[in-house]
Image (cartoon, rainbow, N blue to C red; front, side, top):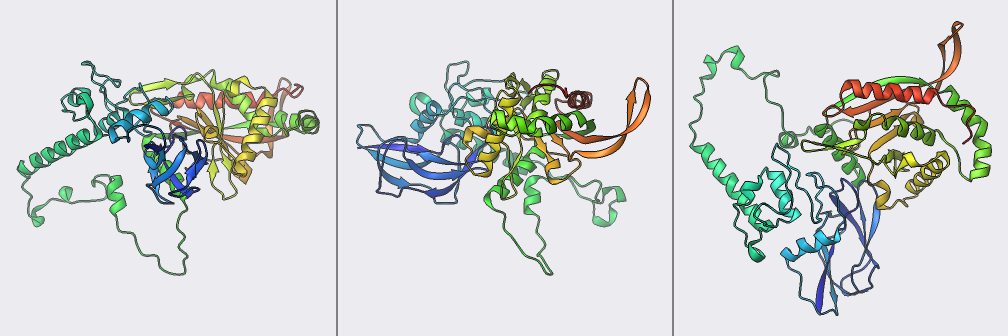
Amino acid sequence: MAIVDLLMPKLGESIMEATVLRWTKQVGENVKQDETVLEIATDKVDSEVPSTAEGVLSEILYKENDVVPIGTVIARIETDANAAETTEEDLEVIAESNLPHEPFTHEEETLDEPIPFVPRSTTPVINNTSGNNKFYSPLVLNIANSEGISMSDLEKITGTGNEGRVTKKDILQYVADKKSIQATDREMAAPPIALPKTERTAAEQPSETNLAPASKENIEQLPSAAPSGNVEIIEMDRMRKMIARHMVTSKQISPHVTSFSEADVTNMVRWRERVKSQFEKVEGTKITYTPMFIACITKVIKRFPYINCSVEGDNIILKKDINIGMATALPSGSLIVPVIKNADYLNLVGLSKSVNTLADNARNNRLKPDDTNGGTFTMTNVGTFGSLMGTPIINQPQVAILAVGAIKKRAVVIETSEGDTIGIRHMMYLSLSYDHRVVDGSVGASFLTELAKEFESWDIHRPW
């Protein structure tokens, strides 16, 4: 008999963990290969995990509602195959060969081979193998990256694994020893002599202006005031907790700047009103403003490539593919962002069908993990809910997100060759939040201005 480990699968970009919703198989039950064993959920999508082997489910390692990191063993299946039981060290190799290849970042632990190690500091980018041909698993590299361990320090660690390989246990012990030494050094250092309280000057007294910023850990430790009065306490559900964490993380990672513009979308409104009935009759799908906006966005992105990139350490990763995420409201009120892949290669009919299919699948909980993966730029339509404009939070690891507001009729000045006139036009505000680490204000504002012009120049006589 052999034991096969069932791993928590990789479910898309930036997803580091998933929640166990329900086990469809119990210990002792027979399972077939590719048969669903459990249902899981992330902040983006719910999914089913199939069995990777045929046999008997011998062990379940996590309970329902447990949050499990990607690549972790969640269950074991006993098979008739003649194979030895998998060890912890072998698990790293299995995970590396089974999971898809993606860039390695601190936010998302990718267990693929080979895979680059992206440092957070100024240390150079390194791979799984060092100059002396030592192999380091992505799990070990991830820990090294998180703890600021350079390759030269990593090479000094004595490995206890096969052929001297550094294991997870080895590097965690190294980190613990290093922190212990640093703590001892701090204790041996002579503490500064504090003046008596009565002798301190006003400049030395703590104040709101000279207190050090609170760290995340300190904030979490702050005592919360007990609610009083006529209140109702509602615990966040799983998705709301994950969304909250991702929003806070995005603000911590990216210095947000938001620019605003407005566009005269009268031509868009009139064109859609003219063709929408015939469009649906001929193409079998409705024409909304979203695919029209996306068609314009893809054109302008090609003129401003830095809008379509991500940041990894000190490297700017320019994306050649233009994959547009569109924020979609779920019946629960939460938002999910399905992605239209290679949107610049689709005509208006293709964009309309993609938008409508993804939106329908989102509302009916039929999205697949790949449907929310790989976005390079996001658009959110805050106007759907009546808002004139918004300041959206960047969808990591992207560097920009566009919010389109409600379309309103307004009296505006119209410039013509014969002079200025006042007319009733369909106007809409646009707002672009962007990561100021790589997108300067001039680039962000110029992109938004060009996008507004693209909306305004929509050909009212164009065929679809």
